[in-house]
Length: 530
Image (cartoon, rainbow, N blue to C red):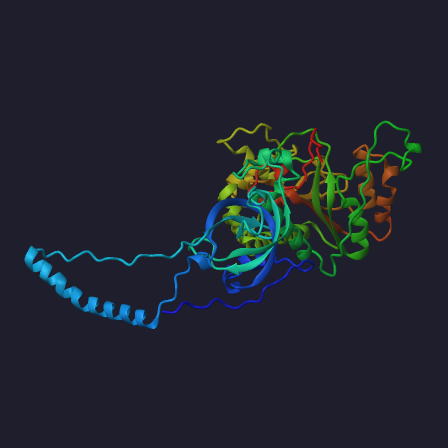
C-alpha cells in the first residue's frame, strides 16, 4: 500500500528575520515531513553533537593519465574475444558434468564472483547535532560537513549557529522525521569551553540559580519561561475587556538615613509592596482596572517560597462585593489552567517528567473543579480537629493562619483549591471592609494545592468614618492617606480587588517547588547578584 503523503502546509518565516522558527517546523501535525526539500534558514544553540563519517556521494572515478591508458582494440580483436566468450559459456556446463562423473563429487563447483573493481565512496567527516532555538521543546537534527564549516567550532554544547540548508528525511529511521543538511553557515558563536558552566548533562535547578544569566539555555528553564509567558498572555486575554483597562502604577524607593527634605522626593519614600490603593482611585472612576508589575517585600526570609522582588496581577472592580471578587478569582485561575493545558502541552509534559509527575493531572482537576469555600471560623474548627499532624503554630481563633494551616486544608482535607474568607480584622489591612459583626472583615485567600496561598482579595472599606477609625487603630499617620480618604468623600462606592502572586501561579502550573526558579532573575534576602 502506498504511504499517505504528508499535507503540503506552507512554511512560516519569523516576522522580522529571515530564519524559520523551529516550532513552525517541528510542532506541525506532520512534524515537518511536509517541508521536505524546502530551503530554510534556522538559528539556535547546540544541545548535543556527534562527530561521524558520511559518504560524500557518488564515488569518484580513479584518475587516469595518457601513459596508463591501454591502446584501443581493433574490430577484429573485439569480435575474436566475443566468439571465445560464447564458446566458453556453452562448454563450461559439459566440462563440469564430466568432472563430477569421474570424481564422484555431487557438490557443485564454487561459483566465481566477478571481481568488484568499484572504488569505495569517499568518507567525509561531518557532525550531526541537535539545535534548539527556544521556540519549542523539540530540537532539530542538523548535519554539517567538514567542507562547510570546521567541525571543532560546532561540536560544543551552547554554540550558537545560523545556518542555511535543505530539509530532508533522515536515512536512518528514528525519532527525527526531518533533518537539516547544511549548505551554508551564516554565523557561529563559539563557546569558551574551559569556562562554560553548563555541561551537556542535566544540571540541578539549585546549581543553575548561580547562573541565572545562562540557565535559559537549559531545556527545563526554557519550558518554565515559555509557560510564564503563556500565563502573562492569558492574563491579558482574560482581563482586558472594555471594563478592564490596564493601569501600571509607579514605584517608589526607600533610601538610607538622609535628610529627606533634601532628598529626591523631598520626603521619606518606600518600596511599593502593592498597587491596590492606587488601583482603587482608577477603579472608582473607570469601573474596573488591573495592574501587572513588580512588587517588593523586605521580609528576612530564606524560604523557597519568598522573594524580595516578585510580580503581581492586581485588579480593582467598582460596584462589587466580596462574593463577586471570589467568583472572579475562581474563573480567572481556571482560565489560566485551561490556557496552559491547551497551549503549552509539550512543555507541561516535559516538566511532568522532571519536576512533578502529577502537575498535568492537577491542572486538569483545578480547571474542571468547583473551589471549596469556607469561612475563617470554619477553617479553624476543622484544623482543631486534626489529629494526624502537629502544626508548628497552634490553631486558635484570631491567629493569622500560616501556610502550613492553609496547605493542609487544600492538600489533605479538600484536595482541591480552597477559598477562605471573613478573617479577623486584626490580621488584615486597614482598608478591608469590616463586617456587620464588628470582629471580621470581608477578606479572602485562595489556597492552591501544593503551592499554598496564591491570591488575596477583599472588599474595600467605602465608609469614610469606618476607614478613618481603622487608620487610627492601626497607628498610621492620617496625613499620609489624605488622598485615599478623598475617594470616600467624593462619590464613594462599594468596590473590591485582589492580588495574584504571579510566581506562585508559575510554580503551580510547572510543578516547581522553589519560587526562585519561577522568575528570571531571583532576588531574595542577602541575594542580589543581578
